[in-house]
Length: 363
Image (cartoon, rainbow, N blue to C red; front, side):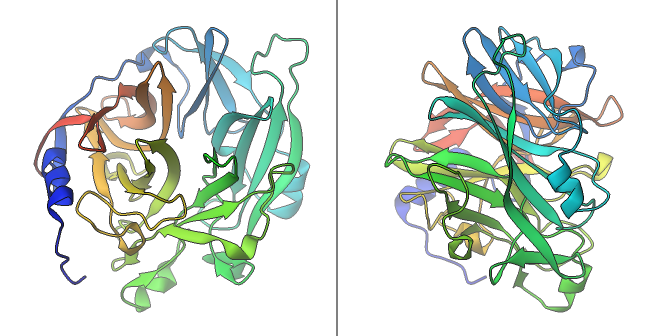
């Protein structure tokens, strides 16, 4: 990529971030979650509060969820699903999980976006549930399934997928309502096992996309008008270090912040999952990092890559309470067979950029 001239304000922000792509965190903001007391695996967490309880939802075979009174100690409460929905199993074979849920409150009800995909492929679909309460003991507790919201169908085997004349992967959806009360869905990731893409240098595949939703049905108004917010060039298929996925949008101080996870997750000691971020004045972009690099050209400021023995930090939510932002994400415990664990840490802000690492050193 041609070097860019960096405006002074962006350079200052970058220096305050104290990190470049070849550095790793050795002093992160403390994790408050008592992950050692949770026997289940926590992966791709999303968090909401109702009344005195915090509720957390995770990827799992049937959509596991948890509750807490203090954000520290969490109790397993069961599963959202009793079985994988028929509309999913009729559409995609060999499904074994409910993945990357997103929970939020909209128009008097809780909305739970979820996905499933055939392992190792981009053959995927995103669905939607609604409920009037998150309390499983409440008499009106009932999840209503609204079926398919978005589908990425195989176009070349199951390594390139999409639809509506676009390439995309219908996973990792996050629901967002902007200041004009327009609902949006930000979603996506680099494709599955795209080994054939390596024959073309600097090819961009998949990426993070944005779609405007119908405010009543919460289905895309026009799927063909999706906007690409972030993408990474594929230069070396063997490493998996071209992946960008798990988007989350936060609005703060006049900017939309786009959090993303880079590189491949779930590789044990070889996991290089990490959280990156960029920002834009417009939800539709363009998004840049603190160095001025465009996210749709591979940019992204590193926010966190590890915390001591907890490696592969990624797939984050941001939960805000009493003007304090919390980074909610998973990591892999290198002292416990790389079990996925829950992490909650306070976000600090410096010169308009989020910060959760206090010291970076060369790898």
